[in-house]
Image 1 (cartoon, rainbow, N blue to C red):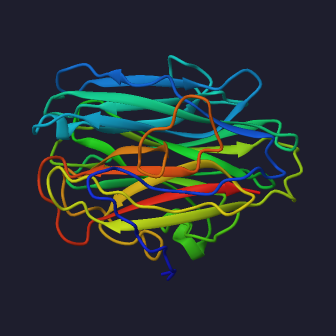
Image 2: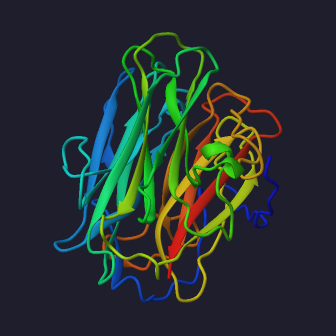
Image 3: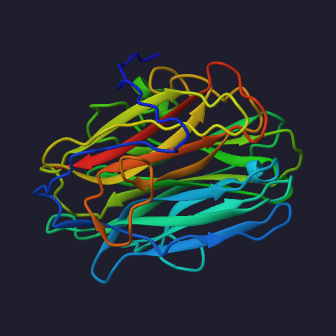
Length: 347
C-alpha cells in the first residue's frame, strides 16, 4: 500500500467543478487549445447511447479530452451516466491509431430510461515542435457482469514514450446498469500495484491510464471495459519532456442529486494537457481502488472548465481548470464516498 498526501479539497456547493488555475506557455508545447462543438440533447428510452465528437483544428493533435453531462430532475435523469470519454481517428465512430484529432464523449441512459439530458465533448488539442506525433494504446477486458462487481483495465505507453492523456469506455450489450466510474493516470509497477493505485499530486511521467467500470444491480453478459492511453509517437526524444500529475479530492456525494466539485492546479510555466476523474469508496491514491458504496454512483463529467466549473468556450487557449462531476443515481451513497480529479501538466 502506498501512502501519499493529497491537496486540500475545495468544494463549491451545487456546481460540478475541479479546478486548475495558473497556466503559462511551456517549452514543450507551441499551443494548447480546447475545442468543443457545444451540447447535444440525448435520446429518450432505456439502454440508449449518445455519441458526440469534438475535433482539433488543422495541424493540431489531441492529447486528452472529456465530456460533461447536464441532467434534468427526477429519478430517470439521475440514471444518465458517462459511458465513454475517448480519443479517436474518426468523428462518427470509435477508432484509435496514430495522430488522433478527435475526442468522443458518450452518454448512456441505463436501464431506468433517460429523463432530460445533454452531452458535451471536449478535445484538448496541441501543437509542439517536440512531440510531433502521437499513438494510442488500448486495453479491453470483459465485464463487469456480477452485481456490484467492478472491472479494471490498464493501458500502458511503450518504453521511451510519454503519457499525454487517457480515456475510458464502458460498452453495453445486455446490461444497462454498467458504467465507467474511474479514468485516471497511474504507473504500471508494483509501487502502484500495477495501476490499481492512482498517481497523486507531484508524481512525474506516469506511464499508464487506468479505467474502472461498475455493474449496479443488473444482470447480463458481454459488457466490456476499455482503457485508452494517448502516448507520444515512436522515435521521438522525450528525455526533456516532464509530465506532472496534479490531484485533489472531496468527500461525497452522499445525497441522491448532489454533485461534488474538487480543485487542483498546474504550476507556473506548465500547460494542462488532459485530465481524469473518479467516484470511489476511499482514497484511490493511497490504496487499491475500491468501489463506491452505492450501486448507482457514477460519473457525469470530466472536462476542462473555468474556476466555477462552467464549460470553457470553443477555442479557449491554455484552459486553467479541470472539473469532475459525480452523481449517486437518485439514491443515497454512504459516508466514505469520494470524488477525485486529476490533471496532467507539461513543461
